[in-house]
Amino acid sequence: MNATVLNNRPCTIAVSGLPGAGKTALINHIGKNNAGSAAAGCLIVENSVTDTASLPNAGNGGTRVAVIDCFNFIADYSDMECPEGHHGQAHALTTATRELLQALMQAAHVIVLNKTDMVSAAQLTMIKFISELINEQALITTCAFGKIPEAGIIFSHVQNAQTTQGI
Image 1: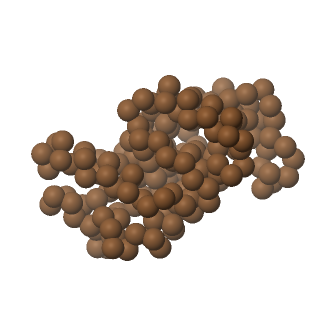
Image 2: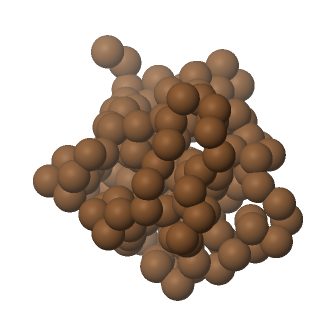
Image 3: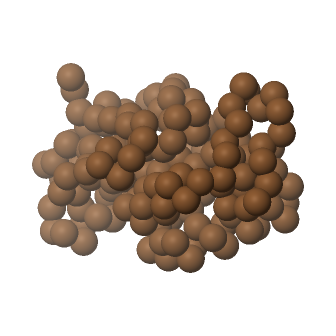
């Protein structure tokens, strides 16, 4: 496997999220739309998080990306239940899910708020606010269908982290 080398270190990105959050869509979008950028050939690891033991470790200089399903995030942080028929998934509000989302977001360098097309502007503002409260150091971006505008926000973190560490 050819990995992009930034400052003599391979670029490693751990993309994590709950099942159905859009991790694969994000990785496919990065692969298809960033062939000439720092993304080309990066080692990207996908991880479905089901408990805190499965949280990713991208290693030194690696970037941890949390993909958050905005539609289900609303249900996980409120007393509402998801409407019937949402991709056959009904996410009940549980303390365990909330704690898992918080741990995932706290561990992230970059938080990708996905499925923004399924929430209102007011809901998205609330999700961004909660995300910033959970991890004020993370870079936060929004998208639908995993199509982040240029994967630059993820890769700028990789390059900044390596420069800061003197790598």
